[in-house]
Image (cartoon, rainbow over all chains, first blue to last red; front, side, top):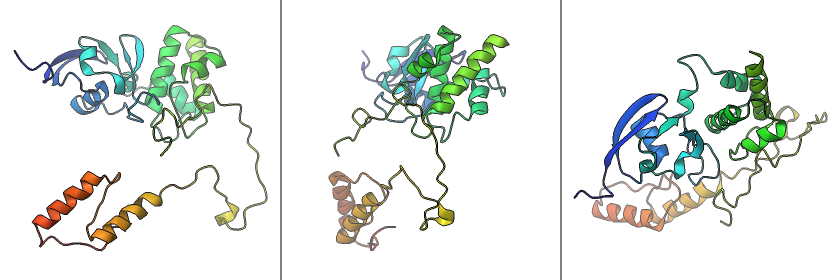
Length: 162
Length: 93
């Protein structure tokens, strides 16, 4: 029998595309995304689940990909920041972050956008408190969060209007 | 370091931050360029290179990464003693 800790075949759907790769079962999902699949939009901030920079959506749940052994996402559907834009066209949420100046150094931005997307998919018209609550797992040390929250609120209104 | 991880280096999240009001200080700092004064971000860049340079100076062996662990020092000294022709530098930049 083969070594249970050795590399094995992992199948998952990433941003709508089926992928099969060989990885060690305890490799972090973050590393598999960044190194195996070259999806470097997800960032490593702290590597211990505190900062949210590596957030991705796994089967509809917002998770920190630095804490997920890749074996846990066998056959899962994953959305990363690369899955937000339609080819070269930004999503309304991304556009809204841009319009409101909701980014400075950009390391937290992919996680912020996924957390905001996850919120808006559940709560289309969030209150300012709901926005702050939903983004509380994502640390930003540049902006003070004001423009980021504004970007989310702005995107929510825009989606309702058009 | 007491708070070497994000778990206990308590950074404010979006839920913690109070509303922020910005005031403009019209009388500039006489020591800063164009009256500018930096606040809030204390530079922490100096100590680590200074310590690494001190070790490099003491051993005559360059190191170019931090954190500098005892294992790194041991490994570098081992490899230097194995190849005596390897140039030993006077510290690192």
